[in-house]
Length: 77
Image (cartoon, rainbow, N blue to C red; front, top):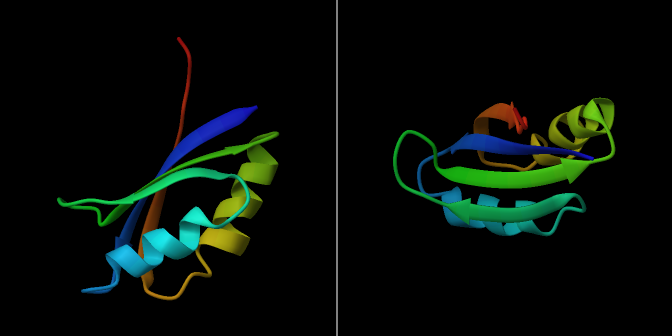
């Protein structure tokens, strides 16, 4: 299992709606609108890195109102 945080920037005024839509996507375990340089922070999980990439590119980035994403895989050192 691969887990990651996805940091999202949105269009002005769209953070809450983007977080709501993303929270409903399979594989997303948490989606919160926040303040700071990013507007939404998502925690997601997938079977492997390829599936995680597909989740981000095909499902999350297709949500209207997103301008940029940064995917941060979780590592256990």
